[in-house]
Length: 212
Image (cartoon, rainbow, N blue to C red; front, side, top):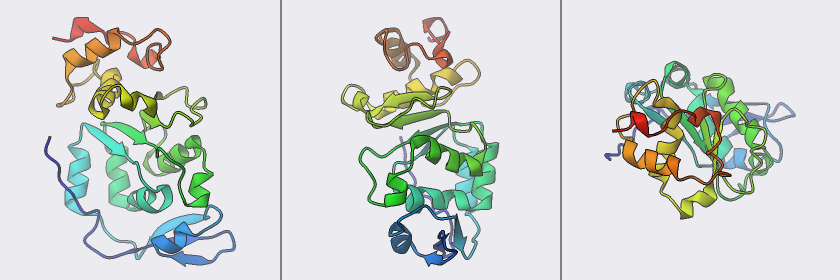
């Protein structure tokens, strides 16, 4: 797998938050010191996204969001119009990976997983995130319509395999370039009956007959 680091913008910008008192808080470090969620996040100035970043999203089979500091590392990506429009139009599977430990930023640390998903989808569209990888202590009960896998599986199978499992629900309609179908079938047919994914409706009918 080849990796490429693509800049979200070629123009300098600061993260700007509006706190509950209406004060403007500039910069990642200062935003991290907030004690409550800001009313609004934005970039100052509002800059343009690079064409390379937009093209990468348009051509992606799979988009992974996270892990990282939620307010200061992840959310700035969704404050650029071209980027959010590309994500809205994308037909790729989208996976959100939560942090294993608690964030140092108090507002982000106090956010529920559903709140983080909702904040992201406010920018990219409802129900755009197909799957979530979460810490075992994270409450995922309010995400019945998403594929959820807890990070304690990391000791058993690789992240790549997890991603392949998450993409299983898409195999009926389109093919992702990197999926190992035989390995995917092997894992799906050997999951425990009480496994997190074993009874998920998104995985129904994805068994071996369609895998060569």
